[in-house]
Length: 132
Image 1: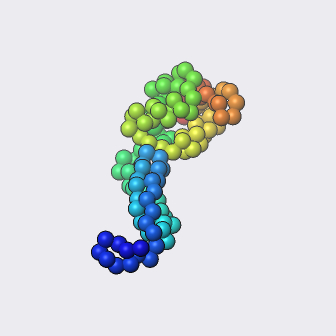
Image 2 (image 1 turned 90 degrees about the vertical axis):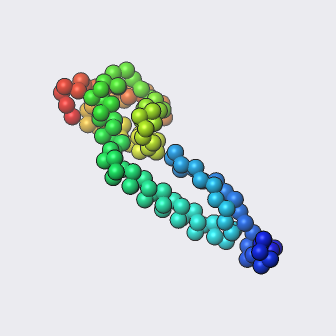
Image 3 (image 1 turned 60 degrees about the horizontal axis):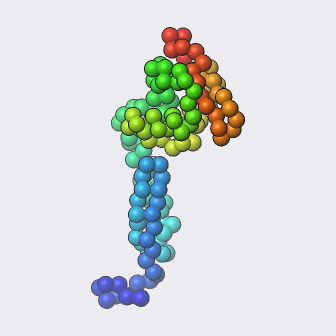
């Protein structure tokens, strides 16, 4: 195989698309470099995610506690609804992280959980004036 400059290429080129959270990246690299390139991209996304978190100072838990204070959970909500509301507010968290924070808020007594696994709904357990 020859590259466009006339030299020989050591391996074939591969094009791939990575999706992580709200990020989607298309890459093209030599087949023998795929693992290395993916590791570098994912590391870069982790650094970016941390930088965004530090610059805003807003954690997933802080946002959901704010939603609780606003009585957003006054009617029961699914994980998907919570995730959509966070995105509507401009924050994009992995659904697993959102699910963990919801479980934390249930343990802390701010929310109640109804339903069964993979089908839970979350509702305000106590009013905000009683505080966390």
